Image (cartoon, rainbow, N blue to C red):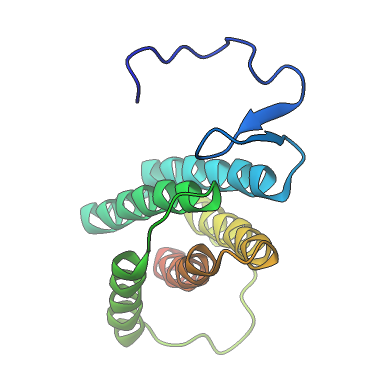
Length: 160
């Protein structure tokens, strides 16, 4: 964060904001909308961590938040990749899937507050993924797809 950063300077009061590189962009642009949702998703993961008892899962969720910040930068135009983060999530999914029995019926969220919140966040993740594909942000879209899968498994674990 720059030392001279001061929120509330009014730079966006006319309906425009800056993308990476200083390009002024309408706040209604698809990239800006998606980044607002990714920001919300990151905050929701923080809320979820407050209800998770397992330290390892909390660490995994913190790693997902960090990856979402990288994804937001890429959505805003920064160069980069999420290959490492996506591979790490795939490994977590493989490990968790081995330990859990697959559901035998459609899941209706609501077993408890943490499980229901996890499903809400998973659904928000899917919306972000769909919008990422819409702006052709492949790396963030693939990461979000894996994150949705991971969150499904976290919800299953917390339903018990």
